[in-house]
Each structure stands twice: as C-alpha cells, then as structure tokens.
Image (cartoon, rainbow over all chains, first blue to last red; front, side):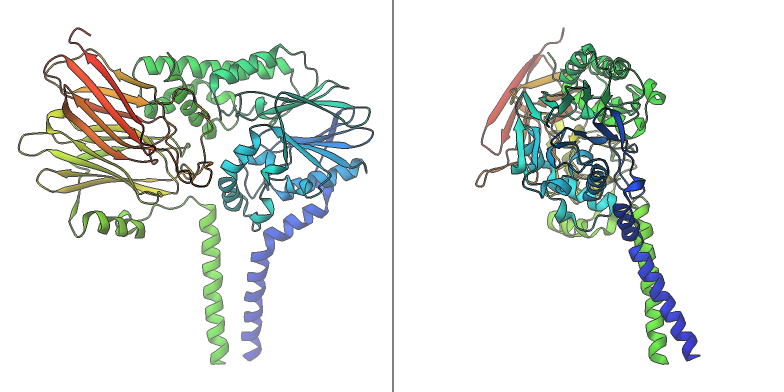
Amino acid sequence: MMSRTRSIFISILQILLVYSLTNRVVIADEVVDSTVYHVQEITSGNFVHLGSFPPQSTHNHGDVANIGFIVGSECVAVIDTGSSLHVGSLLKAAIRGVTNLPICAVIITHVHPDHLLGLNAFAQDPTVAVYGHHRLPKQIRLRSKYYLEMLERELGVDHIDNHIIDPSRITGVDRLLTIDLGGRVIEIKAWDYAHTDNDVTVTDVTTGTFWAGDLVFSKHVPILDSNVRQYDQVLEELQSLDIKHYVVGHGPLDRPWRDLVGEQRRYLGLLMKEVRAAIDEGVSLMDAVNTIGWSDQNRWFNFELYHRRNVTTTYTDLEWED
Amino acid sequence: MTKISVIQKSLCFITMAFLCVNTACATPFPEPDHASVPEWLVIKNLMFGDREIKDGSNDVLALYLNSKLDDSSTVPIMVNALMDQTDDVFIETLYLIIDRNPIPTAGIFRFHPDAGKVKLETRLRFEKFSFIRAIVETNTGELYMDQRWVQVSGGCSAPSGKNADDPLLGKMRFRMEDQLRLNEPNLVQFQIKHPNESTLASDLEPGDSARFIDKISVEYDRKPIMTGDVNFSLSDNPIFKFYFFPKTAGTLSVLVEDTHDTIFTESMEVRHDK
C-alpha cells in the first residue's frame, strides 16, 4: 500500500515536471538543431529564411517573417531578426552554417516585433552595427513595453528582459546609406510614411536583390500602420522599379515583382475609394469596418484578422481630407 | 500514511489547477459576470456610493459596439437613449466607464433637455480586456446601465503611429447629415485633430505632462446642448456625434480645452435652406 501511494506520488510529480518543461525543452532542442531552420540562397550571397504567416503563436514560435542575410567577402549583414531571441538565435546559427565571416551589420526594416525582437541575439556583440530608420529609436521607445507584453502573452516567453532593445544601439538612416561588406555594397534606403513611419529597404547592388521589408507582402493582406495615401505613393514608386529578385516581409517569393506591388495597390485603391464614398454618405466607422472592402476577402491570407484595422486606419485618415 | 495521502491529494489539486490555467490560456478569455468585477465594485462605490443602478438595456439606453474589434486604440461606440426627453423626465448625465482603463471614467457627458434625443457616438481606447459601461442618470436621480465585454488591449500604451507630428493640430470640422430640419432632433458630428496623448504611451521628457482633451462644450445660439469631461480614453483625433434641436436657424459652437490649457473653438452657421 505504502509503495503504491509512493509510486502515484512520484508519477504525479513526473507529470507536473514534464508538463511544465515541455515547451522549453522543444525550443531548446531547436536552438541546438539548426537543421530544422532552412535558409535558401535566392541570389548569390543573399540568403533568406521564409517564415510562416502571422500571427505569432506558440505553434510557430514566432517564426513568422521572412528574414535573412547578405554575405560579402569580409563580413555579413543581417536583415531583420525575427520575433524573439529564439528566432534570432536560429538565424545566427544558420549564418554559421554558411560562413565563418564576422557579422558586421544588422538592419531592422521597421519597428514591428516580428522583425525587431530577435535583435539581442546579435546586438550583444559591440562590433555589430545596427541600422534602422531615423524614426526607429523613437518608435522602439514608444512601443517596447507593449511588444514585450505581447511576447509574454502570445509566445509564452519567460525572460522578456533579455529582449529589451536599447534604442541608442540604432544608427539612424535619414535617406540613403551604403555599407561595404567586402566586394559587395548594400544600400539602405529610408522611406517616409508607408507601411509604418519607419521603413527601410535594402538593395544588394551586386545582384540587384531588393529586400522590401513589410513595404510589400505576397499573398498576405497588406497592413497599414501609417498613412494610406503616402503608402500608395511609395508603392507607385516601387512598382516602377525593375526588380528581378526580391525578398518581401511575408509570403512566397515566386511571382513577378510588379504583380505583387500591383495587387497591393489595387487593395489600397479599393479601400480608399470605398472609404471616401462611405464618409460622403455619412456611414460611421463602426459600420464601415464591416462593409468596406470585403469583396477582397478571398484574395488575401489573414484578411479576417487585419482588414478591419486597415479600414480604421484609412477612415481615420481620409475623414480629414479637404 | 495519512501524511502522504494529504500530500497526494494536494498534488492532485495542484495538477488540476495547473492544467486549468494552461487550458485557459489557449481559449479566449471568458466574459466575467459584469456585476462582480473587482475594479467595478471599487468604481461603483466611489462614483455612486450605495445607490441602485438598474438594468436600463430594455427601455432606457442601448450601448452598441462591434462584436469583432481589432484596433484597441480606436473602438467606435454608440449610446442611444431609448426614452424620450420630456419636461418631466429626461436624461441629464451619461457616464462612460471602462473598468480597467488607467482613468476608468472615460467620459461624463451632460445633456440639456432642450437638446432633443440623447445619443452619443465616439471612439475609445481600451488598455486591457474590460467591460465598458454606459450609465445614465435622470433628472429624478435614477441610474440605469447597459454594458459590453470588450476583448482588445494595449490601446492606451500602444501608439497609433498614424498621426506622428501632425501639423493640423486643432483643426476642427462639423459634419451634418441631410438637410436641417427645424423643431426636431438633428444629428451632427464634431471632430478635432488632437493627439489626445495617453499618460501611458507618450514619449515624454521628465517633467512634461501628457497633452489630452479634458473638456468639450457645445452650444446652439448660446444655449447649452452637451458638455463632456473627458480624457485620453478617447482616441486621438476624437469625434463626437450627437443631436441638437434647432427651432430657428442659428449658430452651433464648440469649445474644447486640453490639459496644456489650450482652448479650441469652432462654430458653424446653420441655415434652414442648407
């Protein structure tokens, strides 16, 4: 009897232990085992990891953005760092699987956490320069607390303190900045109000590969976190560029550049047209989010999740038009 | 033996509690009983003491929000009175309360009985999952409530990014539907460009204070229509939609004050042949 009680006692203890450790064990395994984390070389020296579609969850461990790196003859530039230290560490391990050259630069395309919060996997090394839009440090100061809470809530990350980003680490880009990785020059361009108010893109001049960040998505519904009219002007400029090879922030990279930008502009155009009509007719924002643009519902991934917010952003801007 | 059994029981209990907590994380947060939310009990006691607050959702007021919300910094809400404003009984005050916002009293609006029907549309920020309550107080001192459970968060601490350094601060605009109708309630929307900074979100230097709108008052031909004591629970660039009751052509005027002591005024000539 005594021994039976004891064995029940022990098995409950085991269940508890396994249960509380499961998530951590899986994550720890993946950090060590970088073979589950694929990067592909889309053009010479340009390596991309294709993330799952957002939103981040414990199922995808926050691996929800397309991130990667460019290898020169002297050093490596990283473009975006993923949602967490976990994702950042996976990317770092993948880089080590390709080259032993030092990492000299990390470029953060914009403030959103799925691109930003893996930064400390790289930034702890003081020789690594971190580049971003000149408005990025301010946005980091404004949003950090909120993003860290999301990390805790949505990804179950215990040690959010490790993820705190030091905004003073960022070298701000005003317009255009070039970096030489050794035999390979990359250009960082800062845009004005677009997807956010702090977007930069990266061009590998050698191969012409264009890293668009979240200015352009593929198959995933665009997300508006700034000004819709100015965003469309930026997209008009991007559409005119003759780009053969590209990386976008989310979604597959298998279609012509102009098709991607074109369908995104068509969506923004639909939003603006229908929102203007609604405002003219006195349709309130409360009703507009449920009626405007829903003809596009089946064209996009995650439409249900982000479209209403896009309507809100568009409406609250256009209601001030003269 | 007894000792082990007790340990065993308590371990079972801990295991079950642990599993429940983890399951709860995976499912949407369930709507609590609105009457027993701890924050509400404190607010209720502070604002209304032991006065009775009746359910007003059948015949006094209706609070509307969309069921699917995804922008916690811009949640449109609408309160409609279901009772008419008569000389004997009329709604004097509308309280908008968000239990778990930094300042739970999102707005206190006073309606003049001459203003016609009571209605208010505006947009609010939600910092945490919370109930929003619309409570009206009649001239006879009775309190009625309608409430909704809202599941969005971060509205006060996450900046919108939409209006950074807006050069149009203080720009104001009226919108009226249809043609003016004399001797009946007419809907009008007033909106003002203002960041309405939250004390939680603003990138303030030490010593600076958040700049948000704290007062609005509306008059028609110098007679009060509606006044509001508000704060950063309202979204940036706030809007207010309400009724006024014109008996003749006249002037609709609005005065807005913010916490940096700036006063904004705007008026609109309302003509019958508009």
